[in-house]
Image (cartoon, rainbow, N blue to C red; front, side):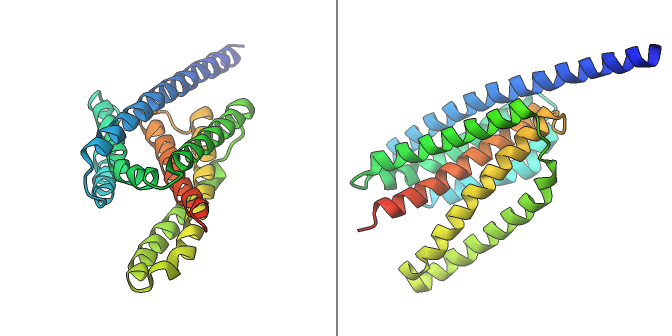
Length: 229
């Protein structure tokens, strides 16, 4: 009977640890989203140049790749998480200013925000309720994101020469990003719920990036169709 008791205790401990990671992740995610919104507001007030978003994204990407993995298990990691999300929020300011300057800009931003929120809550609730394992999507998501990055760079370069002619490709990329981010939310939430991700700082960044990228892609899509005369 003793091995069985140890198995039960081990399962109970694992369940408690997983619940703790879930609770900490969603609490921190909420705080980082609020902090990003504040930084976006600061950016809109200061009105930095449009390329600010690219610069902030590159710095944040460097922090995600090289700094966060080394600090994720220490108190310093929390500051790194807020640094990353604050930078991305600040970089979002010029983009929001651009869309809010449109005739129906407020509606575009609100629709993108609402769609992102409902999608995230719906997908997360599904995984948290069913505890379905979506780890099989990891390779596909990685390949898809690499492809989207490459296509985005190529499209931006091509846009210098073709201008509006390339807009259809950019819209297709934005639509693909939305689908990829839906998959990433399922994948990241599944990892947290099923014990694949035990560090809540890494889990928070994974979900934050999915929300951030989905929101910006939806802004592009909704803005393009709303501005279609």
